[in-house]
Image (tube, rainbow, N blue to C red; front, top):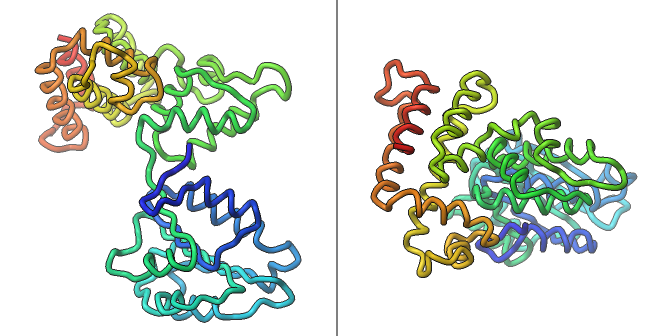
Length: 344
């Protein structure tokens, strides 16, 4: 799934140009999601120059070790026996002052590919870096994936590697691992390696259970499903499993899953046509009517007022799980109390 940016530039567009051999003089890569920043940086490092050219024409530095003046001086150098030189600044958020780089961007060296990899946020709005870089090169903002974007990302990632995955398996992985794409893709790569080279390359809940260690019957996806159904017995069985297997699930992992569900359920009540699952799916920005079925079920089992109360209770449990106004209640007990409140 393409990562859209405020500048209009997407990850797919940047990679398409790079793979076509079109290298811009400047790349300002910034944002909270390091995965896409690393993907672009690594591709430039591996493909902008031939292997024999890198010794003299590729420079990699870290923001904590250089000043903007030093980076600008590196970028102004000419390549040695090569078409271009590459200067990569990793962890560029540690550079204190951008003034000399801002000046460099007024007239960048055409034979230099300068990559500024700024993680954990964006370049300050007070800086002229972004505006000037947009005029002469590429500005890419990498944002964290939202919860509902993770299953489609998983499907697309596996499809590119000739594997398929069902919706339940994708949800299991997304809810267990979360939005850290570097960790997520690492786990997906393990799944791909476990698949046969030919024949059925389909990822099922059984494969996920075996390779990643997520129970196909006792996980956040199944707990959410039990709560949507208001199935008290099933929900309590899952909680008991988590109690006996602490590594399988905790309040820190499950509370966000429940909050996301009930937050979307509250929005579903405001859908123009909440009796049609396709319309509800579009309203919630889901991929298909199938994905809206748990919300249709939730609207039948929970009133709007109850959902508002549940959201308040989830916020309270979340605060307590982090130690606020909670002197001694164990995390597991907090989760049990929360689920009891939801179901009764």
